[in-house]
Length: 148
Image (cartoon, rainbow, N blue to C red):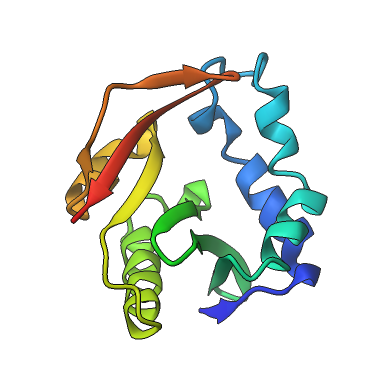
């Protein structure tokens, strides 16, 4: 894993765009245009360039395989793994590295995430618990979760 820089934004955006059917209510993404703009290369570059975000990239066989980003040290803002590697532990390894870095940087509180419905079982395996019901907004559905 390594830290991301703004030059990585197009690749990060493309990785996440390939997973949109897992994130949006409608498989074709209809109704989620506002959400999709937050995943554009320009938007990702602005997050990477913002000190509130810590983006880290994981590679497999020389290709971008996953991205994890924490906002303000305690909120899982992005955690995505290319579909071909789902279920192989890469998400867990990225989360553990991001969490360890946050703790080493002084974050002592809990962690939160707005989990996609499809990722909720993974977050539960990581110890997160739902803090509220499923929310549907701007064409996406998510479950607010927390790890104490």
